[in-house]
Structures are given as C-alpha cells and as structure tokens.
Amino acid sequence: MRLVLVLVLGVLALPLSACGGGGSQHVSLAEAATKSAKATSMKMNLAMAMSTPQLPQPVTMTATGAEDNANHRVQMNIDMSSLIEGLGAPNGVKASDFKGQEVGDLANGHLVIYMNLPFLSKSIPGGKPWIKIDLNAAGKSLGIDFSQFTSLSANPAQIVDWLRATSGSITKEATETLDGVQTTHYHATIDLSRYPNLVPPDRKAAMKRAVDTLIKVTHVHTFPVDAWVGSDRLVRKMRIKITETIKGQTFTNDMTMRFHDFGAPVNISLPPADQTVDVSKIASQSKP
Image (cartoon, rainbow, N blue to C red; front, side, top):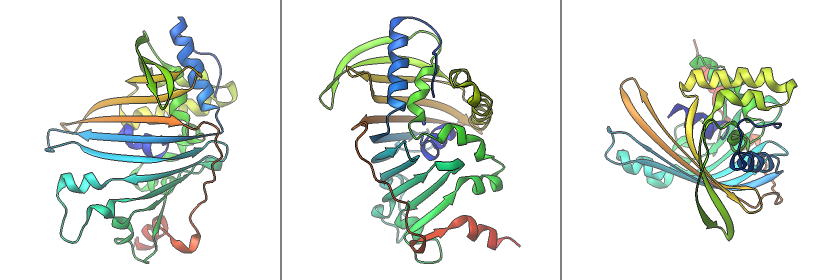
C-alpha cells in the first residue's frame, strides 16, 4: 500500500541510457519505456483497487487527466467515492464529497499536491476549495524525507521509465488493440535497485539515494508488471499488482494506467493562492 501511495502522490507515480539484460523483447520494452518517458506530455486513465481480508470488498479509485512532462505538472480528475461507500458513510458525508481534482507541482525539487475534494475542504478551516499539501514539509512530521524522491518525480512519466529496470525473463503474452492501436502485451518484473545504473552518470548518486529511500519506506524493491506496447513503440498501458503485509495485515494493490495522446498540447495551471489553504502552515501554527 505504501508503494502505491508513493507512486500516486509523487509520482505520481515517473532518463535515459542503456538497459540491462538481453533479448529482442527486452530491448523493445526498454526502447518503448524510453520513448514514452521522453514525451513532452501524455494523457492518462488510472484505476486502482486495494483489497484486504479486513474489508468486505476492494476499495477503488479512478482518475483521468494529463501529465505535462516539460513543465513537471500533473492534473487529474479523481473519484474516491467507493472509499466511503465501501467503509460506510458517516452522517452528513456523501459519496459525491469524494469526487474532485488534484494538481501536482513537481518542478524545481517541489513535491506539492493541490486537492479540491469537498470532504477535505469541509474539514479544513478557511472555506477555500483547494488544499495545498507540501510533501517535503509534511514528511518531516512523519519522519520521512520526501525530498529524496525529487529525482524520482521530476518527470511525471517516471513510472513508465521504470520499465527499463526489469529483471529476469520478459514474456510476450498476447496482442491486443487499445484505443485503436495494435499493442503487444508483455509480463516482467521491475527491480528498482537496478534503476540508478540506467540514468546518466551525473544523476546516478541522487537517483540511488531516492531509490534506496523508496525501498526503505515501502519494503518493496521488486514487483510484477504488465505492459502493453503499441506498434508506434509507445507504452499504452501498465498494470502493477503488489501485495504487502503491514503489522500483520495483508494488503493487495492493483493499479492499471492507460496512456494516450502523447505530445498533445497540455496547459496545467496551479490553483490561485486566494482559493488555496496551505495545510503545512496550519499544522505549524497549531504546534505548541
């Protein structure tokens, strides 16, 4: 669960030299990852389901939006209504309160998330629609140095580039048409510890620190992945499924991302300051 949280928040979640391993299938997957991650922009559909024996049914989240890789921003329309439906809504809480927008600012070392979700806005003083969460500031109170993840999240498409860090065999599963594009479905295993060796030398040390921190936080360094590569050598779909045991409880997270409109014009603006509440400042003011 923690790995998927990091992916969604930060990476959401995102370089560029030789790949390891061998075989024509591996080279095709790595080349597709590199080409896709270099795109100036892309649009994305995301679906995530978290299940655990402690819940009667999986908790799901869906999102649609765009990634501006040139300016390091992400905008998503998110639907978390099944979260409250699955857990049972308290009095006065509606499923529609869990539908809204999210904007991520990943430029210049930032890890800032803006969220416009009614259930959050109603719980924060100020009556403003947007909540600003500076993950670097919030992480300090949790004992997590999110600034280490800057190297991972500078490009919102970084998660696609992770496909170059596969370990072991890559199998060709089938062919499938997605959004009118003929694709080949591959199954592989990503080994995050391999990734720092795949970036330019001047980024290697920072990337290693980021990956080491991610592995320490999540306790996961390898996980299975399915990738659908189009005839245009772009990654059109990825599916990551991770099972973790945290304090004796097992969580399974299943995340599927579909990518389209590579290079299309994208204009993502940050919410205006007068419509935003910075929860980091509220937290610091409330400390004794």
